[in-house]
Image 1 (cartoon, helix red, strand yellow):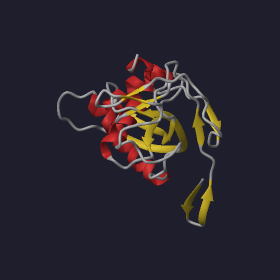
Image 2 (tube, rainbow, N blue to C red; image 1 turned 90 degrees about the vertical axis):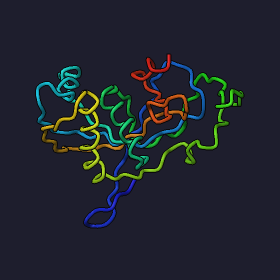
Image 3 (tube, rainbow, N blue to C red; image 1 turned 60 degrees about the vertical axis):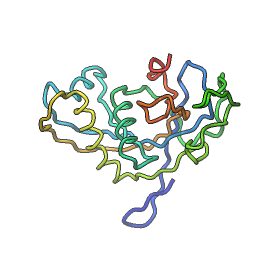
Image 4 (cartoon, helix red, strand yellow; image 1 turned 45 degrees about the vertical axis):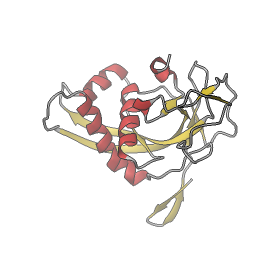
Length: 202
């Protein structure tokens, strides 16, 4: 992939995450572009970030910034879900050559009608197997603050300021497998095909 830089276009190789879900897949597998941002964070001891850090220790947690959309609720919901889950990704360098066939279910439409695999509602995203990348590396650094504050606000029951310092030390572009499913309202209609999200649909 290519990104603009000071000296012109620079190239880099993204990663593709493997499907680790153990549940059957309903619909066409898509790959959503997400930046995995490595942050250096100074936060309060009772913050949500410190809770996540304690869960993943001795590793350090990452922030996840969706790159396939600029719609605020989607960036917030998926960014928070991925950051809280801290998924253990099985990564391969580059774009997947072919999508592994998985057990599939018959899709049920909003009106209750049953359709063949791949037939979806009209508001299904208009891209193919791989999503576009709408947020670049610099955007990911800025949006990392947005996702971080969203993670913290999910833990807060009253309005208060969040005292923190965040610097990004690296960013990796990862394509995460998912299927479009309007029933997954908390994931902005995406079912992420990662084992960490199986409990949300089982």
